[in-house]
Amino acid sequence: MIKRVRYPEIDFKKYTQCLEGSEQRKYSASKTFLDITSLDKWELLVYNDYEAVMPVPYVKKYGIKIVHNPMLCQQLGVFSKKDDVSINQAFLEFLKENYLIRIYQFNDRNQFQSTIPLRKNFLILPDAYERVYAKYSPKRKRKLRLDENVLENSLIKNVSFEEARSFISANMLGLDKEGDLNGFLRIFEVFYKLGKIQFSAFYFKDQIINIIALYEDLGTVALLGTFNDKEHVKISGASVLIDHAIRNHIESKIFDFEGGELPNIEEFFRGFRPELRPYGVLQSSVKSLAENLVRLIIKGKFSTLK
Image (tube, rainbow, N blue to C red; front, side, top):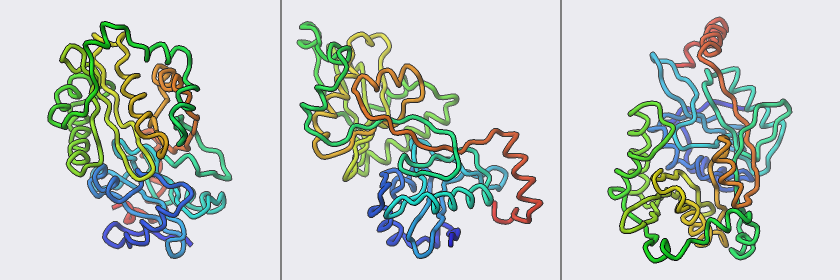
């Protein structure tokens, strides 16, 4: 039996135990990660006594809850001791029948009886760095062989959030409005203060030309952002920074590239020869949202959307 549990009523001890013991474990479903990225705007679907759980983040528009994965939260979905297709399908149907869904992204382990659209993500599983590096594409290996002038005038070091802020602001691509940038920076700053994220910078001639943002937990290092000075792209500082992070963590942790849908990004990530791990997604247009709102009102479920 699946029930809906509002945020103040969640048993976070049981939730965390279920998440940490699950086959699908994802850092992005942790209470800390969800609280910060969603500003505590999430609730929970629970199967029996926390045998399986499914966090559901939302935004509010005109007082109505609309399901929406928050910024930097790529995958959620169902978490259970063993992935069960029938239980996953029950959660999927419950979500579709009781919520307005703008976008909800499951995790790469969740399998369903029905077919849903997939998105791409890439992972490198823990292994000896030498074996991981040996799989890199010839092109990626060439990019990592910096010429003598660059080697003599470059270095890699971690920088503080304050040092990273202005560079990220000037070089973050793909945002539609200033509020999106401020949202990313807020999340980065809170994670940095909690010691969850580090900013690794590539300097050339005493100037930062690349920064990557890495989120780290017990089992995963996730690439939450790559920021590049377009004037120095040919130096391949981003490749060097990612390789450096892989070298430092891959023996004991998954390296999660956190994406791969855009063709140029996919090509870049594939150079490190990661594993493709697609995940399911539900997404609705604005028109479909309006139609679903009418459907839920007719079914007498409007009160559950508040």
